[in-house]
Image 1 (tube, helix red, strand yellow):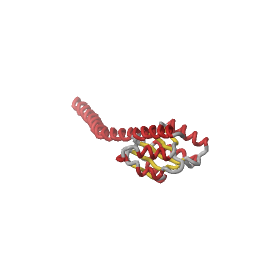
Image 2 (cartoon, rainbow, N blue to C red):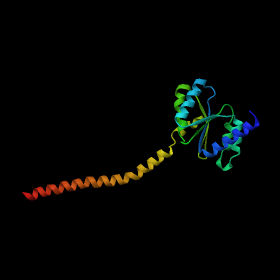
Image 3 (tube, helix red, strand yellow):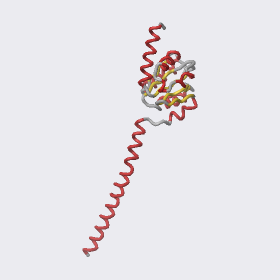
Image 4 (tube, rainbow, N blue to C red):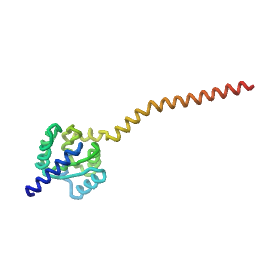
Length: 176
């Protein structure tokens, strides 16, 4: 790889890291070519972009970004084969890795960067699968906000039919 190619790769990675709030670092080194291709296809289908780059280039790209983003803990795991999984939804790569492991046993999670929080190690995978997406959180909030209104409307409707039933019964008795 020429110096110009390395510089170009670092610039592309800087752009990608700075525009993405969620990315995972994974080790897929023992997967066969067929398994890697299947994993890439699954990533593509679920909207996850998978890149395999040299660790030194990834580290240089991360080092060039503002320190307040908190990328420093990731430098320790940038050793050996590393696949970077970029996503717009925090839990999708974790669920993808967990599902894919049922048949292949890999990839292993090295680290995950979730909106300034850093998760190091494969033991964090289960916690990452339980993260809620933005859409799920918005849905829960809307559900919580609608719940009291539904209860009030339900109470009013049930009370209304009871009152109407009572009035009809009283009316029928008055006619006799």
